Image (cartoon, rainbow, N blue to C red; front, side, top):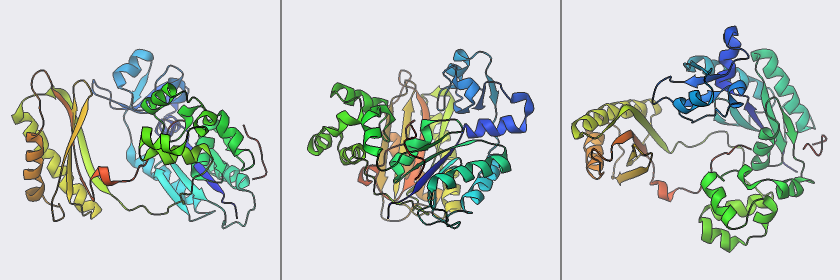
Length: 362
C-alpha cells in the first residue's frame, strides 16, 4: 500500500496569531521578537516578508529593510494554546502525528479514522477546520513520503494545498531547484553549484560514492531524495537527545569574570531544564559564538548522568578555560547543553529548508 503523508504548516504562525488577536496589526508589516540591538526575528508577517524580512534575521536588519516594521513581543502561552487546538484537529483523522514544532507536523493518513480514501480530501478538511476554529490559515502538502510532503506544503504558501503524486514525483524533483531540497542550506547549495548541480535532475546524475566523498553522511540522503526515496516513518514520539539553553549578551564580553557569572546563571537554568525534562545525559557541550559570528564548541563526556549544578559547573568552567577570547575576539553568545552522546556520533539529520499540482486524486 502506498503511504499517504500530509505535512501541515501554519502560515507565519506567531505573527498571524498576533494579527488575529490585535486588529490594529492586521495588514501591517510586523515581526515577532525582541526589539533591541541583539533582537532576532522569530516570525515575520507576509506584509513584512515583501520587504525581505524573514525568520532568524537580526531585528536591526529587519528594521532597515522595512522602516515601518512593527515589532511585537511574543506571547508563547497563547501560541501553545492555539497549537493544541490545531493538534486536536489532526487527531480527528489520525493519531500518527509527528510534531516538528508548534506550527507544523507530519500526519500519516494511509489508514485514517474517517475512512477517507483520498489524502487530499483529508488535507482540505483539516485546513478548513483549522480556519474555522482558530481563524488562521495553513498550508498543506500531500505525497507518499515526508520529503515530498514537506516540499509540497511550501510550494503554494500561504494558504496553499499541493499534491505530489507518485506518478509525477520524479519529473517534479527533476525540475526542483537544489535550494528547495531538504537539508540543502546556502553553503551546501554553493558547493553543489560548484559541482554543476542546480536541479534535482543534475543531482540524480551524480554517483552515490561521489556524493559521499563530497558530503559525508548527507551523501546517501541527497542520493535518495533525488530519486524520490524517503523511507522515514511518521514518528509519534521522539527520544530526546539533549537539553540545553543559550544566552545572547546585550554587549559582547571579553572579561573572564563576567563570563563566569553568565556561565553560572546558565548552569542554574540548565539544571532546572534537566529536572523538568527528567533527562539523563553524560556529555556536556559548551557553545561559543564570537562577535564576528564565528562559532566553536567544546565537549566532555563523563561516566554518570549530569543533573546538578555541583556536577555541571566544574565541567563547564573547564570547557570555558579551553576557549580563546580577548578584547579583539569578544564573545557574543554562550550555550550549554547536556546530551546522550557526542554530536559527532549522531546520524545526519538535515534541516527543513524553504521549499504544480499534477493530480487531485491522491
